[in-house]
Length: 99
Image (cartoon, rainbow, N blue to C red; front, side, top):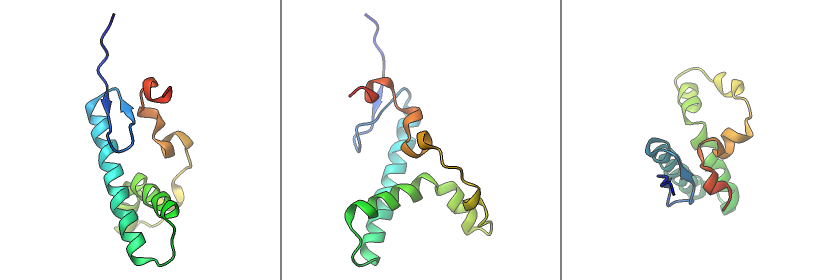
């Protein structure tokens, strides 16, 4: 029997084939949580699910947002919708997909 090393993100249970991808995913989720907290603190009446969705969206597109804030707002319009990228599924191991 072969032993396969996987890294599990304790924030959402996603599993990864390598440590670097797992750490990047964890950092993205931490950023999303902090953005969500900021949104909920400053926008009255927003529900928790909507706040989390906005937080995840902004965290996933942090590089494009950084470029937009530095004077290139058009990069936000160039972002293509990619469902695999949106869900982060391309780095999740088959183990996580089957759970």
